[in-house]
Length: 278
Image (tube, helix red, strand yellow):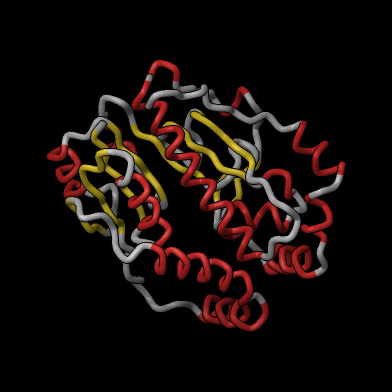
């Protein structure tokens, strides 16, 4: 099964690429670079960045710690054909992918994929990783942080889905909770989420390779409506709530409580059929 990975140019994506290449035929990688800003930041944005540095640095530091972990563990992306682009939706990206003739396209950490991308139509489809539990928690900037801020620790998890036009809206292949001991700090929480996300992606790929006819495709609306978050909704109050839940030990206390178990039991997940001999 020839795979092309289309991803952001970040250390966590470098880790994912190496994990895929170790087990599958990774034919090529498309890396989407962040486009340079077209205009100067407004005073409001400058002040927001300053506040983040002064009061909410711990949140950004947790992500930086995760990226540093993957940079140390993986020196480089796999030695496969690689194309750098400012947009995964560019015609040049399409031509690069077409030339590789993949059976499957993987998406992870890119900007929103637009409709023309679907014309690539690889035989086994286009799959996407969402580091959040769909359809319950979707959007950005980070679904784990939303769960921590909203006292919805039971909703921390990951989703592998068939790609669709929209934000984390595709039919679900599988979802899975992330389990915790109750001793994790913010760094450890994010590392567990990302490691579990990569592991879940690999499990889905194994099933697609082994028997694509058994791969689930569950409409999210059949489960529940869920919540869609945006960057604008990620306010100072939410950031304070997140840090408070970590600092005051609420997260660690709730994780092993009966309330937590009960809330998780009420959530519907989509398990993968077992794969053997893959």
